[in-house]
Length: 391
Image 1: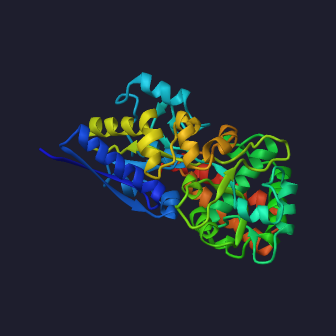
Image 2: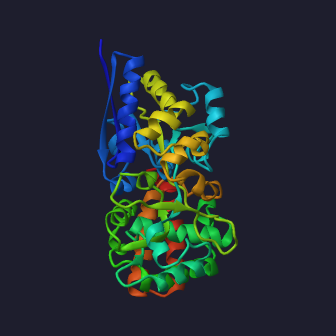
Image 3: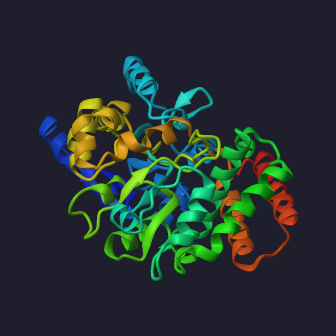
């Protein structure tokens, strides 16, 4: 009898193609199992309520900030009873930065880190070479690049609300060496003000479309025109560093830092989770193990447009040769990355915070201190609301 499982990912080559290839590979191991994938937009992936997916899909590619709500509402199955402990230990040992830990919650593992990412820097080496510039190492370097680019070229910074928030979070973590909201603490006023001031200093130089673009849209612009030469903070997509993916090749490196250590980057990536409504959880777990295995990660997963999560793939010479060194050139940033909060209801806070930060950047209002105070109040309120209601 044929078994059919459904999965949900996001609509980009990196999100869909490696999983479609994995489903074909799994069918060779389990001829009676068919796994079909649907895809949603990046914005839906980042903000869409997980509970609306769990009833329909067996396998879900999940962003780790959703974990707290997923666990509170019983939307996912813990993997500890379905995946061998030795395999989970290997995944933890070979995690790229905090990728594995980001799906560990209340003592259990809720997803496998099949895709790892963080905010990194991106640049067009050919455009920088034309004006004798090098990728930035410090934040003063970023401003120097912005001021020296010729007419018609700009730096970029994705500033749709969730990514305005991402950059603010990264800068706060880098400046303070802590992720305060992830610890349930107020963000210190001086840290938040300094992060906002740094972002504001870049605003006169960023591409005019920055406030309307997410990372995919901005990297597409970088790869199809000569308008953006350098981006200091953007979620890395190794696809754009591969020959032939877009007309122009992008390069990627560590994020700027005044300390010399590329720290604080807000990690992203995607975990492969199993819905609590899945009727064939053992089969789903076998599929997830295959996808997360180091051999599959550094071969089929990567070769079919995927961005692996396993550290062995990030260090693999062939993977790096085919991606212009994307993985080895950004690994320090991933290793020193920071993790977003994962409390129940967090996604609501992230959305509100992103809107406020973006509004301040575009309008120079309200005052910086008011913005930081409001963000801290939002954070406390959302935590309290979900603790009290359990909703």
